[in-house]
View 1 (spheres, rainbow, N blue to C red):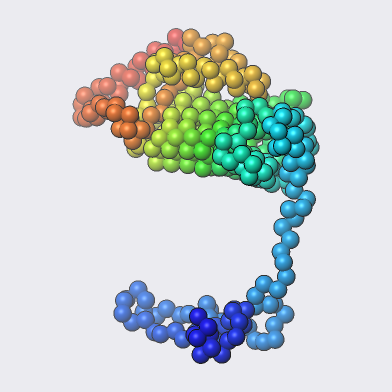
View 2: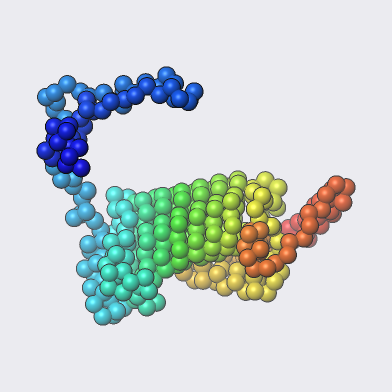
Length: 356
């Protein structure tokens, strides 16, 4: 490298930064796509001396010394040192981003990916959380939020538990109101999220192992999900389950339009909630959601379970079935398919009248 630098007249790498005048650009004429390319804008160099430095001349200040996580880490000292359970409360604002990530890093340094024992740290927050609340939180940590949160809640969640619900003094219905932003649980690998409100678009996109209960989601829910469990207690946006290859989703289809208008069925099968294992799983998660968030909707569904259970739809990816060795039935085509569709519609209409 020094030989090449010497030929170009440079003694240090810093001297090379931005020296586009030393670059020779050969005119590409081999491929038709490359003909006529003009590199002048890329190779433009402002006249010197310039008020803007060509390279990094001063350290960047990202404001990490003001991060809320410093307070969390201080409060969690007994848990970090000896796994002693701790609880604390904090005010939070939307300028506080990735709350919990630095705390998770401290836990990982000491205890690795295993994290802490269940229930070791329980921190409650009041207010509006900024982006990536609960990002990468490991096992043993519960972050409870009374308020709302921005995008990327639970990004990379790694075993921790996130609980979010509106202020207890609010008068609006949680199941009809936005609680958290887009791309919740992006790339999560483990852990739980109980959200008493509606989430934005791309809920649980690329979820790879987390369990979540939410009142409703926007477009592209469970997109590219590969593992985990998601329960949606209300409306979903369009294109639900696009590219979903693993995990299971359960959707409470109150409007009876999930299959026809909202779900992307290219990679999933839609099935009724009849297997006892599925019934027990959904009921158990609803009970925990009710107890942890105070969800009125979860409480209502549990109280009217006999009528509510038939409205749940199990979203089961084709690839997951193949891995489990479950043989999918051959698709019905032509007149038989039309007849089957009409029969299903008639059954749904009858059920609608019967259950109100």
